[in-house]
Length: 256
Ligand code: ARG
Image (cartoon, rainbow, N blue to C red; front, top):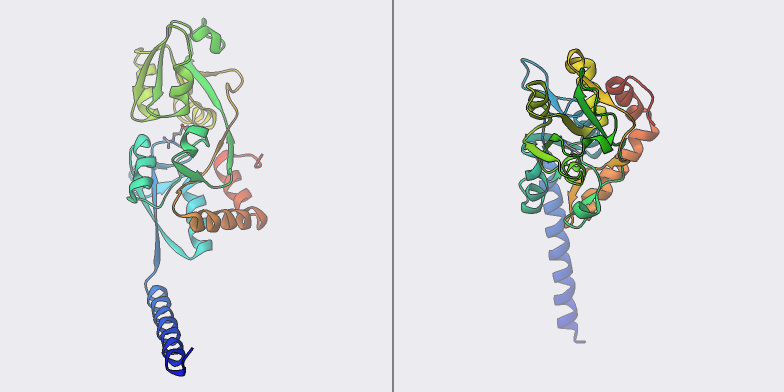
């Protein structure tokens, strides 16, 4: 190689590395933002407390703590549950935290963080219902579910059942209260919370969980680095006791 070419190449290396340093500096100057999608009417995971615009709940505390750990400012966008995965795919949001069950079907489209919550489905019926005591008793009944959820998938497996799909879990509960359906199939911790907080006067929860599910934070398949960062932050929060504190705060018991 001639001396001329050599020095030209060295010059290029210098130019490129200075360029990179420059970029790094610029990035550090503006705060990094994590755009988070959630369907925020799923207490105690994500909801708006009456009279407040702030998002509260276990998922909200968790993602804020993860963001802080990673040095990101967290911005929550409330959207339809069935719009969360398309939102990640199109880049409208970076991640979704929404009590979202890790499923094979969803894993084809997005990546999940390591699991952060163990859940499952239960049935809610009216207090005076004496006929529905198990999943098998749902046969031929009218069932309300939230659109696009694992509860909807499970309800669709019931023979001759009429499934009514709602945009949110509270709408499904309202329909039960109004007598439009016989049962709601939905996530146990959310049903527990509903019964404890508001619905206990007229509704009750049936039996053991129908499924064993785990929640994960959904991230674009194109952003492996972000998934890794989130997993690291989650791990750290589990180690330093912050995760346990949040769990106790929202579920009133120790983390499983
Ligand atoms: N865990 C269920 C699922 O993944 C229901 C989640 C609904 N979440 C919500 N924020 N509305 O399908």
